[in-house]
Image (cartoon, rainbow, N blue to C red; front, side):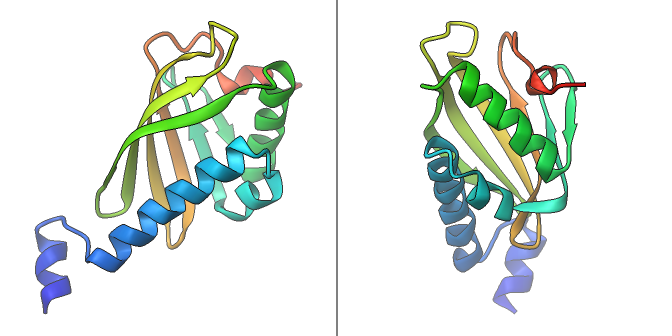
Length: 139
């Protein structure tokens, strides 16, 4: 009964909210540690990364390939999260991508959508988005 009322109001039961926040912490830690195996385990088979200009990286393997390439170009790149908010099937992170490379270092908002307990879509919004992740992939 309570879960249904919360769902009707667009709110999550406390347990699911905690799981989403814990998921975000694990994802950020895995990305920052370059634990690509763990990152890939967190992605749904239909995973899509969409950046500010609408460039899309389709599939976990392509996303991991692009993320590895980003880490090669900017070995110091990391995600720093300032705030997190949870919606019904979404998670919002506000923070920044940090790097000595000025084109990468800027405020960022991530919107994550889930398929069950895995990440289905990750939308990235940045003021300048000068280095779309999709452009790091070899054609």
